[in-house]
Amino acid sequence: MIQTQLLQDLRLPTSTLPAPTLDRLPNQDTTADSSTLSEFAALAAQAFAEEPTEFDGLGDYLRRACHRDKLEPAEETALGRALRAGRRADGSFTPAARLAHDEFVERNLRLVVYFAKRFARSRDDLLDLISAGNLGLMTATQKFDPERGIRFSTFAAWDIHSQIVAEVRQRQRPVHLPRNLHEQLTAARRAEAELTQKLGREPTETEVSLELGWAPDHLTGLRRLTQAGVSLDAPPENDGGLTLADRLKDETATDPAHAAERSDRATFARALLDHLDGRERRILCLRHGIGTDHEWTLEEIGAALGVTRERVRQLEGIALQKLRTEAAARPAA
Image 1 (cartoon, one colour):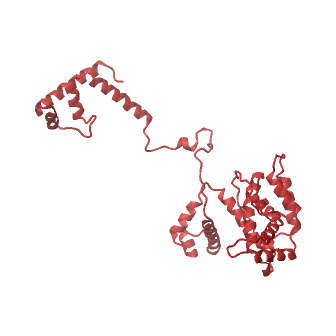
Image 2 (image 1 turned 60 degrees about the horizontal axis):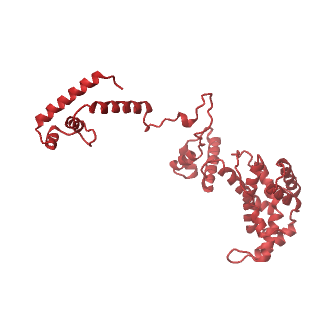
Image 3 (image 1 turned 90 degrees about the horizontal axis):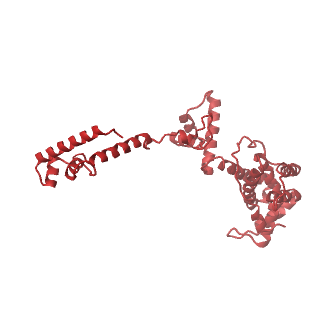
């Protein structure tokens, strides 16, 4: 009999799961008989068999699922009653109830394989989906009431299936959406399909919102969440060799050509200013706001240098003429 720690080990290590589509969601009754479950478990073990490793978690799990018989109705009732009788007020189990819980779970492992196999594309898929389905199986085991006269496979189908679908949907998106948003999106698609059939045309967002009792902007926001993400490093569709990140323009970035040109002009201007004496260079810098937070007036410069406004104007003219002569004598950078 499997113990609690072994049950926890059934949460197999997760791995990268490709984004599968959901077109394999079952529409019919998801209950399967014992022979069907055994067949699916055996097929899963064969379909995803790989070279043996030092420890094959998936192979060990599938062997457990295949080698334990499915519970008979009388056994389900007995274990279910023992489980409910041994539940404490805080939700924990007595040792006897824990053993019944463990037995209940292990005897129904093939049910998880049955649902996970519907979505798996590879061995890694099956590992991830079985791990999610185990959570649903344990949840259903704790909620199962044998007095209602329902077979456990029927009762647990929803919990297992919903956990697996949630895992698939989570890995389809870079950002995980809560389950309640998934349910709202499903309700919106269902209402849109019904209105399309009723009206004979595609309904507007307002009509769908009224049908569901939502605000129009709420439906608009939900539909934005369904937009597929695009990787900036995705390979190009053409032969250009440029990714999307290479083709996107940063409007706030400085043009490298313009930056180089401004740098050359600044170097050329500094070289010209070096041919002026200190007072002439200071006057031109202050007049044109070079190295200051504003352009100084003639009066402000005269007060700083201790000369008149007219003298500052004369010195500025002399400095500018020197710059013109020097600039004409050398090529621009």
